[in-house]
Image (cartoon, rainbow, N blue to C red; front, side):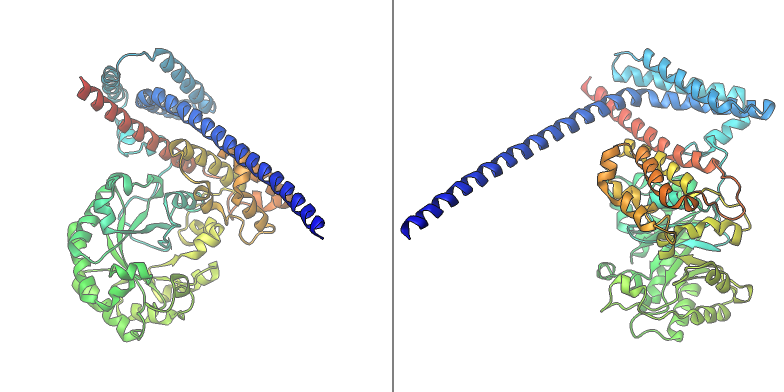
Length: 538
């Protein structure tokens, strides 16, 4: 017996030594792989830095030259209807790139920047001499949006027929750009931004609150309870270019309540009125309120009526966006607060009847065209309908909004074209922000095929990060996604919105140009900082 025990002990010891050796080898190989991965990453970052160093010093001059090319091309199109202008632009741009890289020298950065400033002034003079009217078009918009044929509705929003609700972690700059591929005229809202973030964000308000001009008309939603700070924040938002400022008086989350803003403010209509009055005095763009019908046990029609009466009269508010259900401040999370409290559309319609001089937009539970059309019947007198989760969960619904509710032509893109455009967009964004996560870029398009056959396979493919790593290039990744889905549902890929035989590509140029302009702006900031560093060292 003792001999058998010793035998088993020896066998176990051998197996333990073997496993220990294998585990040691695994750790070594894993460490080697990590080191090699880091080395590749460092090498790639060095290459990117080198390219940016070259391109950053030349980008502004190149950008201005391209502006001149666009103007000349527009003139040629008007005179000769030259269908080959796109090829000429590409060839000319390539020649400019080659010429500028050949002319790049190893002079000091300060001298290079001075030279660029001189070139910039000369080119501006050339544009002024050649065509005074064009310079208004090409310089009138900060981000060079008018280099395309895209024209968006300009400020002073006087209708809110259809709007995309503000949603935390959803309605970011990428989601809003995506929605613009589906609808030009629907109102877009930002995520809720606290007024303290406007004033104290380390990036500064201009960068923190930036949005692409193609997103107009766009509304920024603010949160907070300090009238003076909110008034200052509203003024900043107006200066940055937002079309409207909206105050959040409807969010019931614990985090928002701890800051004493959101839905809990419905219990303090006098404070809300003071906030709105000061915001309205601080800026000239519309200032609106998004609220619920009540909170907790304060859920009678009379409570909602008194809130509207106080805020409209003392706060001078003309437009209320009402989520047609009350909020529970305790016991329910935000997701449950969007579904558990019953909808009371009749309360909102009664408010409109009692306050016919005010504008009311309704929000909550709208998922189909029939529901939207029914609530927006003329006899109801509502100003508009806001969609929240439907915009994220079934975004294709917005592909026919412009025709149905604005009497305008839909952008007309098929899902295939949208994915192709999104591939180009994502590639540019990654070049500009190498640290951006792939799920962030995929999130807007994750439900593009909602309601179609095999949509789950599409979601699974683009959600699997391994697929992106395999192709590395985001544009190629989107093309592979198209090829995968084409095998199982080609009809859904190529289906266009009603009444659209072809798409309006001007909006594509505008969206992509916005991303390029942001990169140019970043390069200019880097160059300016480098110039200051050189001056300080001298």
